[in-house]
Amino acid sequence: MSFSILVPHQSTPLGAGRQAGFDIQGHRGCRGLMPENTIAAMLKAIDLRVTTLEMDVVITKDNKVVVSHEPWMEKEITTKPDGSFISTTVESMQYNIYLMNYEEVVKYDVGMKPHPRFPQQQKIKAVKPLLSDLIDAVEKYLTDKNLPKVQYNIETKSLPAGDNKFHPMPAEFAELLISVIKEKKMEERVIIQSFDFRTLKYLHEKYPAIKKAMLIEDSEEKDFEGQLKALGFTPAIYSPNHTMVDEELVRLCHDKGMKIIPWTVNDKKQIKKLKKMGVDGLITDYPDLFSK
Image (cartoon, rainbow, N blue to C red; front, top):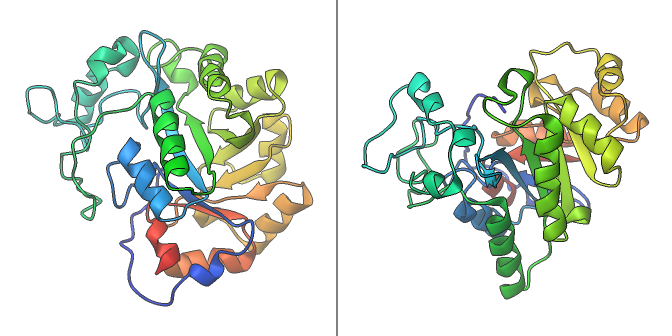
């Protein structure tokens, strides 16, 4: 997901906005506060009372489902095994996770490098976790602390241009992900989201009971009906860039029986504005905004 970062500021508490059923989703865990898509970020998000953990997954050479936004070692967050940094995007893409076994992936740290856009991030040693390990850690944490269960909103990171280069074809990708979800018995607590409608179409046909969210970028054609026609079915959730949302879009979604959960909202004023419009939830890098 793309967005312009806005550093949170202090003002009126938004705790009153935690109305029943409102879904607070921690983006990549809580990227504004902890290294993204790490187990530590998910546990911190739980402490901040999110209702859904949002994350991304990619596939390794040995068919492991790994929590990562890019299918490569992104320069903004990666420290190489020798302690040096990756310096360019071109270099980043050479560290292709789809061509690496997971035992290679865990040699790269993704928690210690200072993030240029998230200065509040706590720096800790961290690796890209297996989705299965992340779920185990989260479930244990919830049980140990006697906390309510959370949902998992999992994005498949695929595009046609990356097929068999940075990820498997949509059907194989989806099956690998579903196998973990089934193993962990999370079918009823998972949302699978994607910009790649091929993934969602496959899942709709094979696993209709799994909740699905269509991700919409602000640069895309804003023809709402055209988007649904392209997808071929009505998903549980419509998830657009927050800049696209107005009261009419909220009404259109609700008329179709869909929830609308925009991304990625990092400003308290905008959160209040969107909640007033009637959105069903929000995805944010700063879940702490809802308790200040």
